[in-house]
Image 1 (cartoon, rainbow over the protein chains, first blue to last red):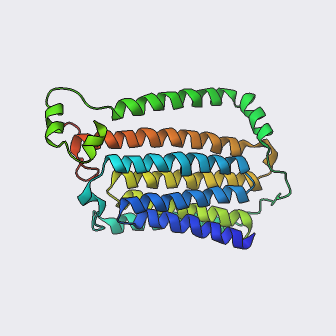
Image 2: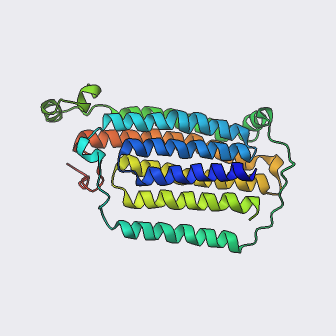
Image 3: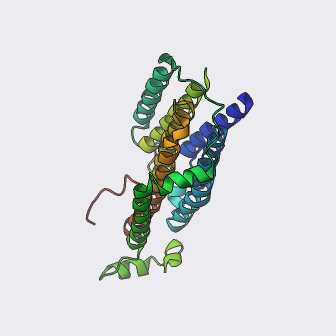
Amino acid sequence: MDTAFLITAAAILAGAAGAMAARNVVHCALCAVVSFAGLAAAFLQLRAEFVGFAQLLVYVGAVAILIVVALLLTRNLEATHEALSFRPWTLGLAIALLVSGAVVSAILGSGLTLGAPASAPAPTVKEIGNLLMTRYVVALEVVGVLLTVALIGAALVALRETGPGRTAKAGEQGSGGSRLEE
Amino acid sequence: MEELARYLVVAALLFGIGLAGVLTRRNAIVVLIGIELMLNAANLNFIAFWRHGPHPEALAGVMFVLFAIAIAAAEAAVGLGLVIAAYRHYRTTNLDQIEEMKG
């Protein structure tokens, strides 16, 4: 259990750090996948199997693919090797360190003594389905509507802009990435 | 360190890493990845508290995380669609160069 936790935590944190520190955006996406997979493993260790597999399907499967496709469509060679010398990045790092330091010290100082009912059985898919169809049925329907709206909205937003001027501008730059969109 | 605290510390560190990325990186897609990492840190907290809370049989934490994952997926789709639209307009995904609202 301990070794498993250490490996999982290392995968999560190293993946996240790599995703935020890598200069090549493709490496960022791949490191983020490692972090998402580590989170799925952590969910499995916490005996939330359904959430763990949903995490694998949605993040490692769908969101990672979305990110990679977005990288492909916005390929910009000089921006791929983005310099790290942007903006007051020390300020950003300091703020992030402050936030996570404050939270960690609060956790360690709180003396959390919630019991460890590790003996409780893992929830079965049947239980989750029952709850989704009874107590959370409104939320489920709303999420369905939200996903539909998001699907249509994402397609509309990413649709080609049409109008005078736009097409001419796109035409003169018609090489590389923009060919894919046409 | 007891088991709940370990997961909470990992989630706090993950949130900090994501926040650092959002604040310092200038590529819109990497900023979106950072936002996803922060969302995932919150999900890890939910699951850890659910597991070690007084009523794990109520499944409230699991349900919340399932809905959060669904909404995060929708958010990622719309966010990346916006990035693609902005890229088509400005020919860049550098957030420092996207500074006009009407261009």
